[in-house]
Length: 369
View 1 (cartoon, one colour):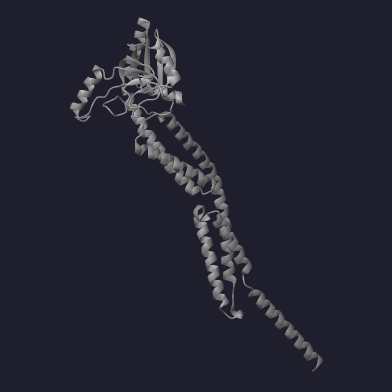
View 2 (view 1 turned 120 degrees about the vertical axis):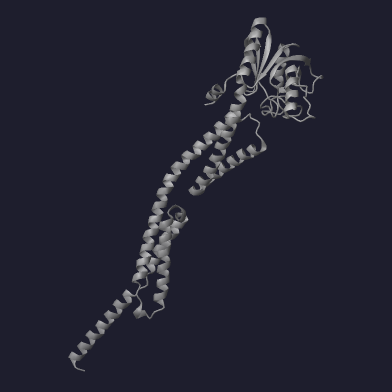
């Protein structure tokens, strides 16, 4: 072979090798781009970008799926005819969109974390204020269940917040807030309705204290809302004691068995020492008085109570209190040590005035804030 021909052959072979290398380089599978996109999508999914940046996350997945479909189609071709350009474009776009979804989710996390933190604090305050105002109110079973459910929703919202599941947290907190606010409106209305009798309670209280001052005697005021027994002498407060009432104390007593503590003017008709009472000492009141009997008969005529209802009796101020909740059948209960002091101060005939409250509603609420 001539030297010139050999040289030409070397050049041709070299050209062909370079051409083959370039072809195979261009046909290199887009593994790096696909891997990068898959990792970015996994990172986005781990922080719930599908919920917090749904459009970006959805588009990123669509581009990734397209890249995988096109990659499979290209791999089925003969190597010299494969073209991974579109595959790379889709994979790169999927990666960029997934990274944007992560960034958007993290921004929303920061905002949600701040807002929900404030919301949790507000609902806790709302619940505390509600329980402070209405803690002693006799709740019916439905509202008691609603309050328990509201507390459960609040706790679930806090738990979801701590796990950074902010959408679930927001949903739970909104439901909790709605329940508590609804209960607050219901019992605010009930309280307002109950306090329509406040002018009468004030009249009774003023009259009792005035008589105590005028005749230099003792008198007892029972404040149902504030849960306090107030002992007056010569028109001045001598002492106050915490009390517990009938389990259904809201409003006046209507009939036997309604577990309500009556309201009105009464007096002590008997002092029962230990051994003569089912409790640690007792002061028996003259319930029902003439006013109670008159109202009882009127309520029967109006159909407010049944025809077979009985008016009841044996309303006492007695010991064995201190349970921390209302439990009596309509009586007023004090702790034994407090009952000893009240028992010693009072005589048969000592007036006892039972009212819903000695303070107006707005004053009570302003004290609780």
